[in-house]
Image (cartoon, rainbow, N blue to C red):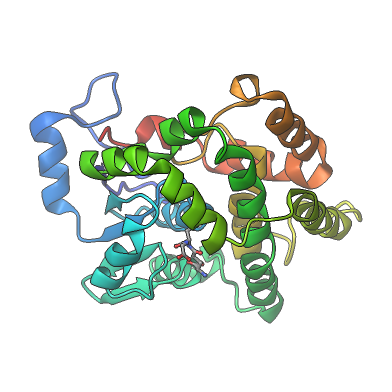
Length: 290
Ligand SMILES: N[C@@H](CCC(=O)N[C@@H](CS)C(=O)NCC(=O)O)C(=O)O
């Protein structure tokens, strides 16, 4: 189980201001439990999910305490419904109610910020672009990376199962061939080249928006559109600063590495990596150990 505690610095990561951990930013043992006691919010996730990363990033950016409850695929549907969601993750449970869907979690985080800091700025174009990305790049990038990773169980499971309950990790490992069939059907995996083209089109459209030299996608500042793009692009650019460890190109077999390198080299991919490097800083190092 992962635990984060909010700090006073709304621009940084949630654990930055936590004391008592010496040079290791991760709370351990009794410290971790104490932090857990203070956690008001529960974020139910599939840890590697890019929609779940949107939620983590937005909460941490707003300096909000949460306890992450990670699950593997399949089990996630029960976890989601038990938490009050619709069968997908992330779901955030708070004292003010349950927020299913990453967009609503981002909006919840926004409520804790001054208007000029909010990710949803009130500009309908921001909302529209986020929803287009959620419906397009999100599933397209997910299909592409799953198509690459599912046939490589050791790599897939090592990264997929980070911090999930031990029984879920064991079950997924043991039932892997069934899980692959289920995921292939559930995610409608069939056309890796087609998915790659779709992702490229989404990247081209983002690069096109920034081709006039603007820094951010809309409204002259970092908004939900930038955060959403960066997170959903993460499935194919694998930023080192992501909320859980992602495999880096040198660990990947050639076919996967070639795709990742191609997307990293694309101007939109470079933008996603830049946003992670500059704005998602130290997320992994500051995340509590499971
Ligand atoms: N629109 C949802 C999409 C969330 C979503 O698709 N989550 C995935 C994890 S990446 C999931 O739960 N997939 C399994 C499923 O849809 O059954 C959101 O933004 O939260």
